[in-house]
Length: 73
Image 1 (spheres, helix red, strand yellow):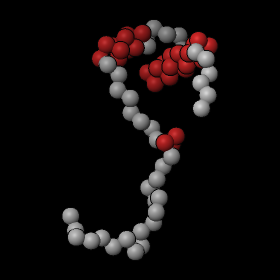
Image 2: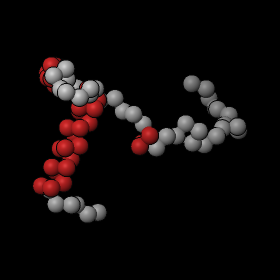
Image 3: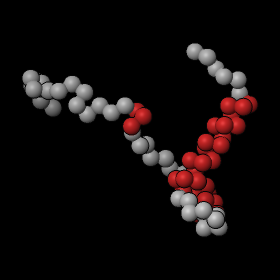
Image 4: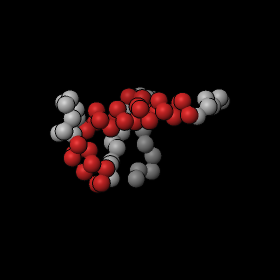
């Protein structure tokens, strides 16, 4: 590591990206992946693993909103 760095021409925030713009990889457990890959071909729609997992998570969020009171603050 250098003793001192020159930041004269530095641009603050050049590589900043809001969290909403980042695609964060999600790793599924082996048994969960096996379940989805077993059931993907049997669906009538042409779904990807991503579509199916997102759909299930959205359904879970909707159920949670009905069951849990809205938290304020």
